Length: 251
Image (cartoon, rainbow, N blue to C red; front, side, top):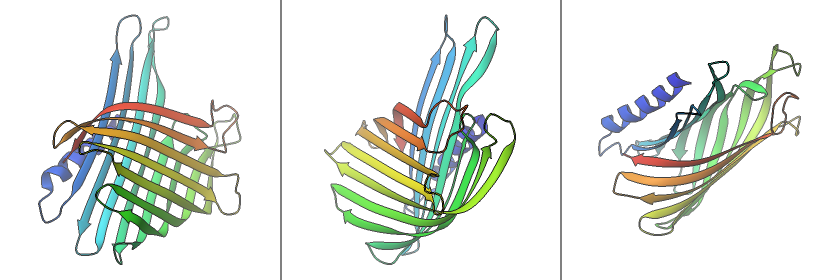
């Protein structure tokens, strides 16, 4: 997990430093960290990295990655255990036919030490439909037909792992409202499901508010809900919820 965090930060720093006016690369990085010492010793790290890189007249690359990592020390046994260890990432290529429609190719992955799945991967073509694009409102929808690979911990309660590959689809909505000159509201929704088995599905929602401090830094709060419908018996919950207060850098 620490390697993943370091990689995300390094990629963000490198791309930010290498961007020039012609490439117009945009990098958006959020980081939240808590360290508790004394009677309780714990560390919590959450981060988000977004990058968008238009090139040529009609092409664009987009990337988004999230990490969540927590540890807690047990004083009786004098051991430190990991309580959260999760990451997800998606990379998109867009070919823009016009300001409304674009061809898209998506590749994504997800890993969670404490979920049913050791990891998930998916990739496939799709389309992006931008319905609103103005100074105050931006709304776009994306839909993809995917081929997915899930490595799950099955049979339930056992340590054996089983690979499941299947055809699936994913639909998402991304909305941004510029409420004032310095603050904006963001809502993201996603649903991904297997074609043949509709009970095998995943959903995600992220609601965020961001307020600028200056041209490069902002403060933000977000609430993310990540739902997995198929879970093993020994997994604690269908739903992961993350409330994050973060320092945001745009460069």
